[in-house]
Structures are given as structure tokens and as C-alpha cells.
Image 1 (cartoon, helix red, strand yellow):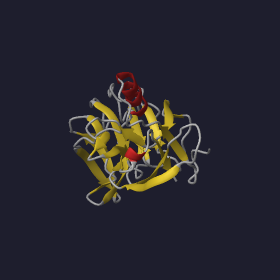
Image 2 (cartoon, helix red, strand yellow):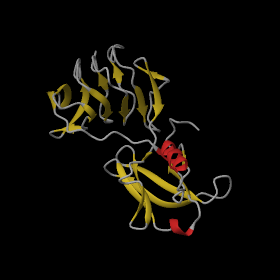
Image 3 (cartoon, one colour):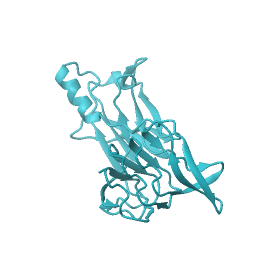
Image 4 (cartoon, rainbow, N blue to C red):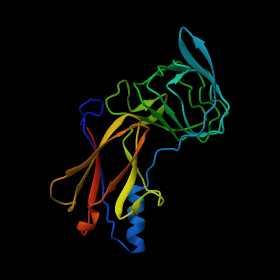
Length: 235
């Protein structure tokens, strides 16, 4: 599979056994599915305007998981400026596909930063010293370009759709087995299922566009099967 191809297929297999009752089985299931994108924090940004584009110059929000907007006041956010997030307590950052450049020490003293999620092609790095005190994983979407095994000296990985295994949303609700799918906004995810993980055909159950980056899937037919396996497929 070519991860940079726009027609690449991504299969994220998940074994789902809604009728498993033993504690060990439930722990195993949660281990397999514990993966969720960060909750978006309320963000506050300072910025400058230059030739009809926005450069982020600072952040005054609470930190944690932050999403940088693609536009501010109708203008595209093109650059993350020098020291823009320096000494901010970030844990993860989602960066829109409008960003084409990242300044020097843009994420300096962010020691708790563990992940960056890029929605577009690899931006230009004005200086290699973007993450002087953090070692995040850099996630990028299939079909985007310019990515290698590292970015600004940090490892990269494909950004794939995930299942939120939060007990409040994962499992049986109103007699349906369901879960929240999280990924980048406006991406399409197909949920497929079969009853035997070792053999059989994966059958499509639902095609969903994650308008706001998430979608709740539920399967009203789950009671008809002793076991049911699901996977996410991105066309």
C-alpha cells in the first residue's frame, strides 16, 4: 500500500465481542480499542494579517489538546510564527491544511507535547529547532505529500481513523451496539463487519462523513450474532 496515494485503502481491524462477560476479556477488548483523538480545547489565538493571510503569533488558552483553525475572520491561517506556542502546556495540536510554514521554536518549552495532527501536506519548516524540548509523534493523512519518516527531527506516522472506547459511548445503548469514530474532519469512513475473523467477507454496514471530526455508529443487528467483528475502511 502506498500511504501517499489518494486511492490507498486503509483497513483498521478491530475484534468486537459484545457478549464477552469475563473481566479479562473486557480488559483485552478495551486494550485493543483504546484509541481516541484529542478533545478540542477552547482556543484563543493572537495573530497578524499579512497580504490577506493569517500568521498565528501566540496562544492564551488553557493548553491541553488544541485545534488551530483553518481561517480567522475569513482569512486563511498560513503560518505558525516564531515562538507562537512557546512555554504553553500543550499535549496535542491539530493543524489545518491551510498551514504552509512553521517558524523557529514555534513549539519551544512545550515539554508535554506528544502529538501533532496535520490535515494537509508537509509545511515548510523555517528552522529545524521546532520542538527543542518535546518529542511528539507527527501524524499525517493518507493522500497528503511531502512527508518522510521524520519531520523537524521527530518521527511521523499515518493518521488513521480511531474508535473512542469511552464507556459512556462505547457498547450497547438502546439495544444497539455502537461507538464513536474519530478522525480528521470531512473524511469518509466505511464501517464493515463479519462474524468470523479468520474467514469470510467483510460486509459494508455504514458509510459516514465525519463533518466535525467524529461520527456515532450503531449496529441494530448485533443481537443476531454470537460474535461480531468490525473494521474501519477509508476509501
